[in-house]
Length: 234
Image (cartoon, rainbow, N blue to C red; front, side, top):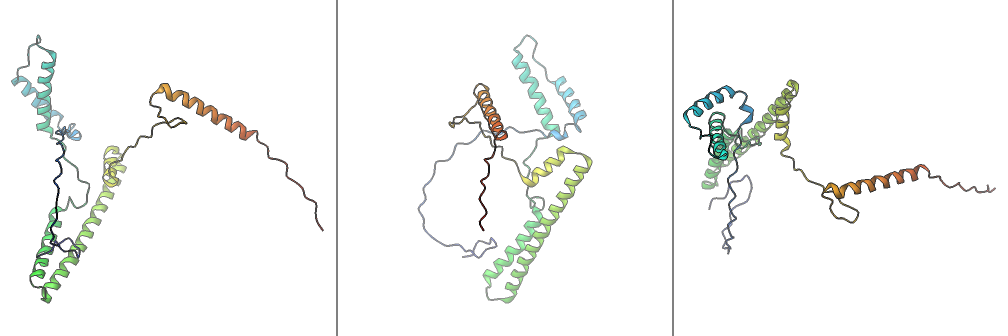
C-alpha cells in the first residue's frame, strides 16, 4: 500500500489494536472577539457617521426605564457598529510558511505526484530521477523562502526602530520570540510558608533587611587573626 509521504523513510504498518474511547472534554465557552484597535484612528470618522445614523434609526428607551436596559441598548449599537466598520482581529500566525502557503503547497503537490509515480513504477529510472529532483527543488525553495522571510522581518523591525514606532517594534519582536510566559515567584518566609498580603510581608522585609545590616556590620568589623611566624631553618 502507498506510504505516508512525510519526507522520511517511514512507511505504514498494518496492525490490529484495541482502543478505549476517552470521555470528550467539556467545550469551552466562546472567546470574546477583540476589535482591531490599530485601525480605530483611521476609521474614526466613518465610525462616527455610522453611529449617528444608527442612533437616529434606533429608538433609545425612555429615561424612566431601567438604566441597565438603556446601557445594554447603547452598548449593543456601539459594538455592532464598531465591529462592522472596524472589524475584529484574527489569529496572527507567526510562522514563516503561512505567508507563502500557496507557493509551498504547489511545491508539495509536485513532490507528491512524483512520489506516487515512483511507487507505481519503482524500477523506472526516470521516475526515480524526477522524484530526486522534486525533493531537491522543494528543499532548496523552502530554505530560500524561509531566509527571505527572516530578512524581510529584520528590515521591518529596523525600520520601526528608526521611525520610533515602539508598538510596531515590540509586536514584530514578539513574532520572533513568541509570547512571554509570566511566572510568579511568591514571597516565602524562613519556614517556607507563603506571604500573600502586606500584613505578613512587611515584617518579613524588616527582619530580612535588619539581618542584612547586621551581617554587613560584622563583615566591616572583622579582623583577620595575626599570622604565625616560623623561625628560619638553616
